[in-house]
Length: 281
Ligand SMILES: O=C(O)CCC(=O)C(=O)O
Ligand SMILES: [Fe+2]
Image (cartoon, rainbow, N blue to C red; front, side, top):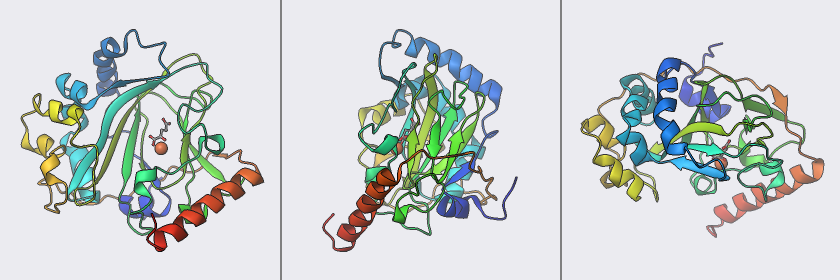
């Protein structure tokens, strides 16, 4: 289903868009063949990573940021700069989410995005590409597709990112989301990209994984995406494309929050907003 909203408006208003198909499945399968040796031997770890430099060295980075992907990213943020770019696996046979397990059922907003959250423009975007098939019990990423300023409703909508290898979504990191417990017997492998306007603070782009990645890249369009010297600037990338219509990802299930958990989330959200308005945080 194609909405009449642009992908930018969809990310501002529902927070999540389907981008399945932007990376052909046979390309994604081929990434898996190159990633297998990197993840080999990490099955005992709760979470394991192939970082940006490994993606660059294996050629995955250049395929990931194909011209159509770069045009979509620059269509949303003309000055886009990466914040995350890695693949990771999470452990199988778990009863709890792999991340933010101290929060109610793992539901959270990404903390570093909250201060600069603007309801009408999606500044902080992630992309997930499934590299292993994910069903509802396989640690599916879950997303609450409503503006986050009032917290979450108990039993409210949830979008579950489930599907075969290559299934992909773009989502607003300021919205509530979680990893559901990976109860399945297979480690869940995803590829994650986050990007944001270069003008915003970026405490990750100077990390060694990004500076080391540069040595494996020569295309200026790829190097610009991880150029730490662009932090604080607004110069547009050369790739700018049209902003396409967004493809919605409709809710498929409900969250399992109790009223008490939802009340806790609401108090925290509203409290944080008040502190931010007062300039305390
Ligand atoms: O691994 C997941 O499904 C969710 C992780 C998460 O919270 C994030 O990427 O911000
Ligand atoms: Fe998160």
